[in-house]
Image (cartoon, rainbow, N blue to C red):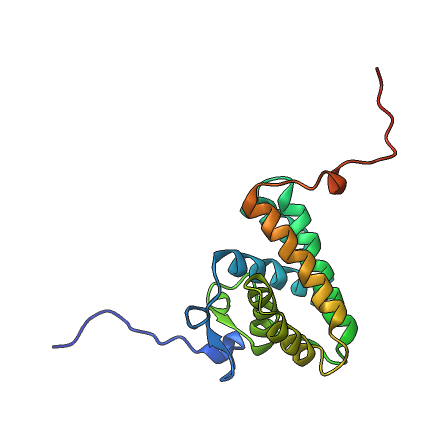
Length: 178
């Protein structure tokens, strides 16, 4: 008996999903890390296609996922980590289109390592995180990447504990009017 429905198979090649990419369900990333992955992809898209203004969407998504004032602070920490990696690497990073529902389901090796550094630092595995940073930074000093990721971990901890670092949000030079 045959079905009358048309069963079309999705061609992952048209979505730039290569054999070395992994389905997102096969990673050990938690929801926070998956949210960071999506924010990261939006920043990558904004670098690759500045006319997309995807950086605005990155900050907007961060504000949706993480309550104020954490969203913008977390997005800024992600951007700082990306800049540290890009400053160390000689080549570009592969990423999947954050606006394609099919591509979002897969992660490139570079995305796995980037989020993997965050994952390992959040679990206290500094040595593994350093090794991954060296790999992602193409054997160039990954210390700035680790510093930037440490800041992201700190902001993550602040978000999850509900603490706000007043120094981050208060201008010490402001004058108060009485």
